[in-house]
Image (cartoon, rainbow over all chains, first blue to last red; front, side, top):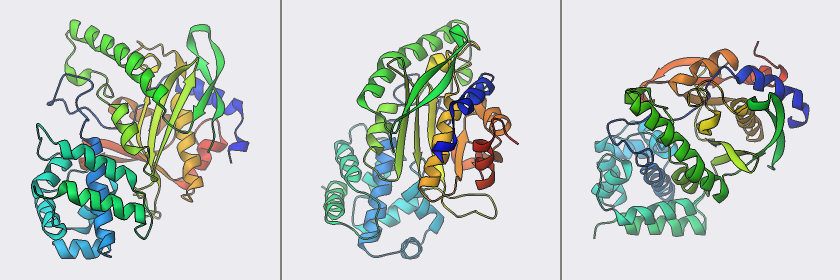
Length: 157
Length: 209
């Protein structure tokens, strides 16, 4: 398909675009800070939370619907946590997940951004473990290693 | 997926220049963002502060942290990063993923490529550059990449995004995407979607239908 696009396409579009702004993404959370670098530090934590929930669900051989049933939350909430790192989960959902998964409720709350922790050294580890995993049907050996690491850093004590 | 040349309009000398689209965000891109984008944006914000402009009217993308985004998503297979380089300087960056679903009947529920973030350098932003962006065409070129990525993923050109308020007209009027209204889950930003037919029209024509 790319071969059908020549430079005249880019030229026409460039002239048309002169009159517009084009930015896509999140609007500022103005209440948090005046600094232009400090607002979105928790994006990577939220990605780690989504990856953890997905890996743990798959390790338990549960579908999203089954996990929603087991935790008594909406299936849309489960899908959003796993697939949309901007989604802000409900506190009750995180509590239910922490019980089923056997990890710390407080740490899941901090990863989700619902609670701001002054010092969450485990969060960096959680992000690294989450980044090790990739989305395929069955847990690979590497993904199992990543999940084991996530469970360790998200467990009490 | 490989790097390839594109043409952009270079306003200062009213000519077209060749830039390169790269399917990743590299350490060099992040250095450019840190060393050049942020100071330029901060200078603009300082100017607005001195003029007494209220914070809600500051550039809406000024708080984005590309370093964190790039690091957090670089190894996730569902995410794809893009950058545009001209004159050895990063001119735009985009982050997309393939985890979202269409919200338009009859394809609702089917996967699409979602543009998570798209930002051009401050000197290429119309509002920051007082209406005279250095380069034009970056937004269209990157949306095209998202469409082509959608085809590569088997999503037939379906693309979704939440536009910042100052950019709504671009996605509706200039590109011809369908606005589906404010999304309460996304700070009430308006959600736009390219259907399969609309993205084909965008590619086939120099202007929307």
